[in-house]
Length: 207
Image 1 (cartoon, rainbow, N blue to C red):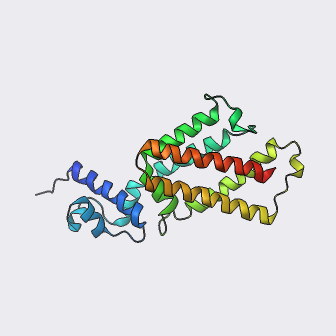
Image 2 (cartoon, rainbow, N blue to C red; image 1 turned 90 degrees about the vertical axis):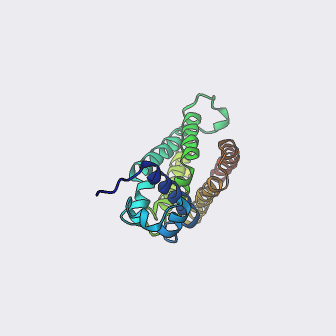
Image 3 (cartoon, helix red, strand yellow; image 1 turned 120 degrees about the horizontal axis):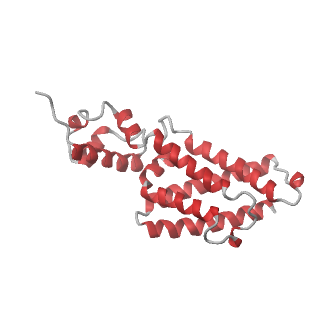
């Protein structure tokens, strides 16, 4: 007699997997831990998922990664031509893109934590560092574009090194914030505060 898979059990396993992967990381998480968190037997998980890879790439799938990347790029691109975000009206593209990204991260906070900070050993393990490098390149491009003398905006090896550290800190703080807070209001407060500090610091860095 064929076994009947139950949607609620599969959802419970997926939710438990997100929790364990976010806490332990892809490499350290085990199917036994996920089973205990889900309240099912380890053997029962294999009725739904062939192995840890199959489970991981179900809860952190390529579609989610594409959506996150698109929203992040949209937020950065919305800064084109903007010298000071404090002068922007509430309906400006930058504020709308920031709100959309923040809401997405709040709704998918454990997935973002995993993608940016707990994906070692998976095919996404370079995603965080690639995001840092992408943000560094976009920051340089942005400040050259708004500079009155773009040709004078030289980025030395030391300056680029500092930018990489700045953006690694930004990504790390994002991961820590989403791992620490579940409430959207708390996430918003923490992210808004750090974003203001970050953007002001970048403006000073390129001045």
